[in-house]
Image (cartoon, rainbow, N blue to C red):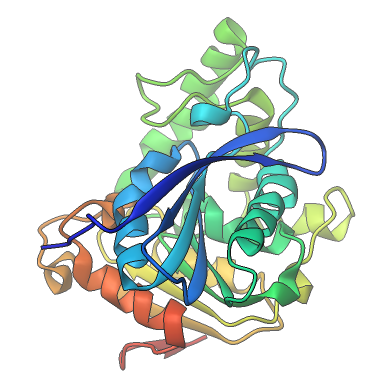
Length: 298
């Protein structure tokens, strides 16, 4: 059983370059040998990742989890009028969080673990040269056509039915109902919906200069874990996202729930207790660059 009695958790405030204050948690279990930045999926608060963060801390890491602006403890009073756009999470929040982690462990190598959009948005993050390697879990394009077909009807209804209704009534996407995550700012939802309507996803808006980015500057290797029962981040969806990073080594690891001693993992279950076999693989990659023998070069 995981013994986290030696793990210290410090609640921190992260100030972004454009003035937002983000809430974060810094996990440490002793003299850190590596820094791990955990970036959340869309609508997931940082508390979802506390178990894997504590696990890494017991192995010799300093781990920073944080809430993107508009989410969890980083939510403003007026979400509808916040002006938060989707790429802000990568451009401003991930960059600031990486800088805060570097301050905490100035002599340790830096790595990232991205869940869902937390991996997609690595290309928006500045200071790319400071990161040694990236791990992705459940990361894949939001385009509905590369998701499992059983999921498509509910996705399309969410985008164009339920979401449109919520925007008209509330001005944002509230938590609960059809949406299981935290409440979403309106421009986050609109940008996510716009990208998810096409196979090229965010690429056209990178090409036309709408959003400054660093996707072509990512040189640190990426290893992406796909869970076979994830209806969203399928192998195809993950491969599409990996193709957005043209100048680094990339690997893909496919795991079935059975491989992890579980009946179900899905899109977010990898971070729940009981999935230590996966956490061990992630740790081997983040700490020393060791991959499972089944990893496929992409």
